[in-house]
Length: 180
Image (cartoon, rainbow, N blue to C red; front, side, top):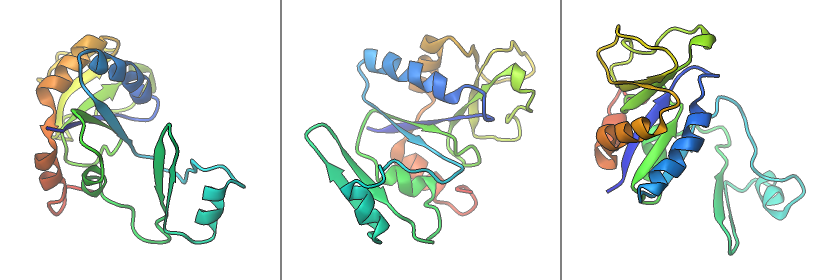
């Protein structure tokens, strides 16, 4: 059964660095892992001049590129609204865990990633869907489980304990007001 958990924090908190260490840790425990990453800006994964780029530039809504090593599906919104997290999760292939980076305003279970040098406010307690904190600070002010940002094994333990089944996450995220 696929389970999901998010990692939320301000830019520069170390979410991507954490996930690049956490994924191999979870895989070493025998789990299959996928990720969903939110980008706040336009991005391109295609190479200008390549056939797939030309298909997309010509107006195709979706372009699927496949080889013996991988396949990728690109979907152009062409002015349509950005899909909600629940919809994106529903499009993922089954794995043990889907780790969600970003989407900090969504109502799925999350681990807050907080770094002192960012000098940003905590997301918890304003976000009730935060179930634990990974930080480079020691804090007794939060009643949530709190682990060191560099303790990847402890963070993997939190993932195993806190992650929601995918169907529950999608049901919660698709309720009005929970997917903003």
